Length: 187
Image (cartoon, rainbow, N blue to C red):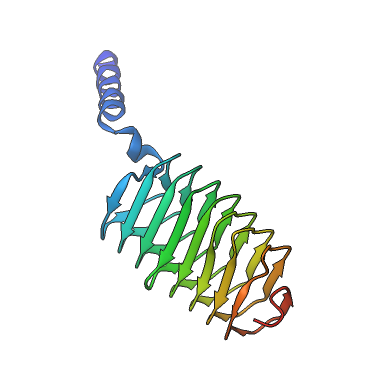
């Protein structure tokens, strides 16, 4: 009887380990296009890949890796959109991000006509950046970017903070509940 139970236990363990693909065990990888589906965990855009999301729901974070490109239209993200050393990040068209949008040490980025419950943080990027017509629950921060920053037509519940950007940010018509600081004092 004990040998039979042990055999059944081993068979169950083997079936589960063989039958479950590695992609389902953790983050989902995106190369190409995903439509109106739900991703139950984090979504990764691997190094050098291109990912297009249209109406996709992500129940974790979107992680954009080195030299990767993300275009997200009408997406819903329960966590953050985080990019480091990415080539391009675009969040647009009625997208809802419950956390932050963070783009560091990369290239271009655009956040347009979206709702971000947390912060939009752009730091040390070297290509064009735009934050246009968004509702932001936290702060909008642009620090040490060198490709140009446009911040226009946003409703920001926190602060609008800009430091050490070259050239200095342009834009205007932002409704800011907190303070407009440094290079963004007149935006």
